[in-house]
Length: 176
Ligand code: ADP
Image (tube, rainbow, N blue to C red):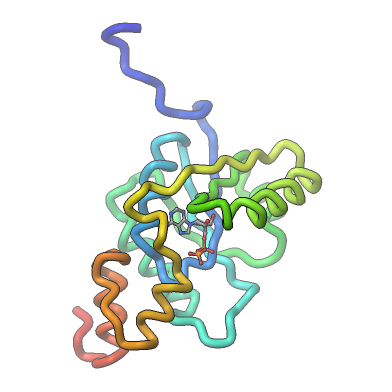
């Protein structure tokens, strides 16, 4: 209605989980978090703790700190770690939405499989996909890790807090 504020929530009170490994958090993740946070009452960014890669860039506690820092300006965004089944974690948080991002058709197959499995396990939990913004659609944590390992510059792909942490890894005194 003209003059009326638009209700931004999917449904008032909706809690969503945005799960991932976030190793490291990228500008693409942050874009999904910012856009997703406008749709729900509470958005919990949940870092997977049980499928550790052999050589992570950042340990899980550091990833949690990074995401907290980078989302501090978004009051309805929380950050947490979780192990075990996502559907069980979501139930414990009273969440009804799983938020995921899709970059390209290559993401689709895997995301579809996960969404259908999760739906079979918990039908009242809906997976909501946000299309990646064009400027970040080619950004992935895996590519960032590879560039970092080869000594390349990732300035335009990750938030400043990730850059600061990367610099601190090279020279530990660099961190404020
Ligand atoms: P990645 O796939 O980059 O290793 P995650 O496993 O942490 O990262 O991904 C968590 C979710 O975020 C997935 O749904 C993934 O498709 C989505 N995502 C990752 N990078 C982007 C991006 N650049 N734009 C939009 N969504 C993304």
